[in-house]
Length: 464
Image 1 (spheres, rainbow, N blue to C red):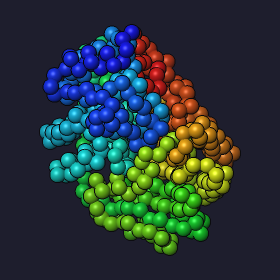
Image 2 (image 1 turned 90 degrees about the vertical axis):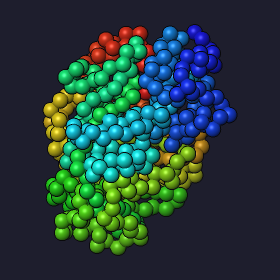
Image 3 (image 1 turned 60 degrees about the horizontal axis):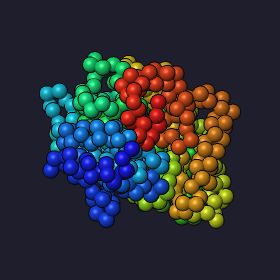
C-alpha cells in the first residue's frame, strides 16, 4: 500500500492542467475539505478537484490500485462523519457544476458538484424547474443519490423518480450512461443507493414548467403551540392539493423555544382559505410573498448552524394528529431542559407532511423505498452542538428520541414500525436492513457484480 501523500503526488503527475491537487495550507484545500457540519470534516492527505471525466478516471484507477481511502464530496451537507470526508484523498466535485437545459427533451443535465441554489437560478431563465433540495447550499450529488424530497414532491414524487440518466464512472474506470433501459440493475441501485456503484459525474433530470410561487415562513411564540398544532393537523387531514405544502418546526435555539411554519404553493397566488389557519395565528416574524422558486431555499435559516457539530435522523408517520404533534413539542422541550448544561445550540424537530401518493409517481423499482404501496410523512430530528466530546451523547439522544417517537406513533395506531428509514436523513447508527429492507439482497448482488474488488468500499458511507 502506498502512503497517502505519495498517492497524491502520483495523481498530480497523471492529470491534465484542467484538474488540480491541493495540500494543507491552501485555501482551495480548505474549501475542498469543508463541510457544513464540522463533525463531518477531516484533514485529508490532499484534495483533488477533477476538471474532466478523464482525469477523474485516472485518479480512481490510482486509488483502486493503491487501495487508498478516498471520499467524494458534492456540496458537503452530509452530517454523518466520514461519509464524504477522509484522511486519504478528498475528491471535491466543484468543477463538475455546469447546468445545461435541453428544450427538445425537456431535461436538464446537471453536474454532481453543483448546488441547488445555482440549478434553480439557471433554469429560472427558461421558465422550468427540477426536483431538488429545499434549503440553501445543498449539493446535487448526495441529495440525488439518497432519495430527495422537494417542495414539488407531492406533484412529481421523489427526486430519484425524475432522473432520466446518470453519467457514471464504474469502479474499474469505465465511463457509462445508465438509464432504465440501458442497465436496469444499475439504474435501480443508483436511485437511493448512494456511492456504492462508482462516481456519478452528471445527472439528466426531468424538468417541469415553473412560474413564480407563493410562500415563506411564519414564526410563533410558544404560547401559540395549541393553535399551530391544530393548524398543522387540519391542513394534513384536509388539504389534498398537490401544489400545497407546509413544513412546521419545533425549535429550541440558544435557550429559547420557537415555533415556525414554512408555507408553499406552486403558483403566484394560493386558493382562498387553504392557509388561513396559519396566517391568522399571531406571529412574531413573517416573510411570505409571491417570489421566485429559487428564493424558497432561503426560508429555513440553515446557515445559522453552519460550522457546528450536527446529526439528523427521520422517522415515518402516517398521520399528523394534534396529539402526536403535542408529543413532538413535548419531546423538544424535554431535551432542551435535559441538555441545558451541554454545548447544544439548536434542537429542531421538523414536521414534514406529504401526500400518501408521493411514491406512486414512478412504476420503476428503486433501491429506496423498498415498497411504493403508500407514501409517508416524516418527522426529522436535528441537533447541533459545539463540543466534540459530546458527540456520542447527541448520537445516542437522537437515536433514543427517534425510537420513542416511533413507539408513540405505534401506540396511536399507526403502522410505522417496519417502514424503511429515509437514507438522506438517517443517523450514523442506522443499519442497512433498516434503510433498504427487502431490496438489500438485490443491492448486494448488484454491488458484487459491479465492484468485485470493493473499490467503492474505500470511500465512506453506507455499503452494501
